[in-house]
Length: 215
Image: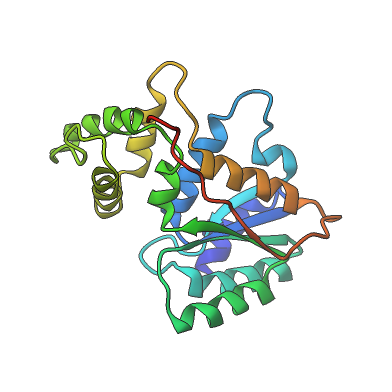
């Protein structure tokens, strides 16, 4: 009932819901969606509403089928967006349950939503945005280091401190700021799967994005 009132009721104006593992996933994808260029229509233009499987700490892939089944009872077309932040035998069962409950599933490359935010972006752009996080009384996660190890630390800090939106705001503050390519591709795949005539794969893997050469 909590999911119905806080998430699905608000989505009744859209024919399709895309269920994520948690509120941080919704925050990240929604912000990138809002910042897309005018030539790329937002998810709402394709009739898609992002919702989280948990509004607090009770989210995760195991909660998606519960929300998905309720959404289908309400008449929604149901998509899911999941990550690959762990590898265990249980994950296979969880994935099967999510697929059974949804019309299509979009799966991020290996890593959590924080990794999806930074993959494919220049190291300097990440370091510049990282430096602004000191405003939240924490040390600069990258400390100006243009290395993959520094990016890994940045992801850990964003996850631990819940600074997803703050980091993206800093990233987008620069003129001609690059769009996170993995998240942008995820949105494009959700648009593709949103149409009732979609007949492609039920499990759609977002490709891994390489960092620009020399970046």
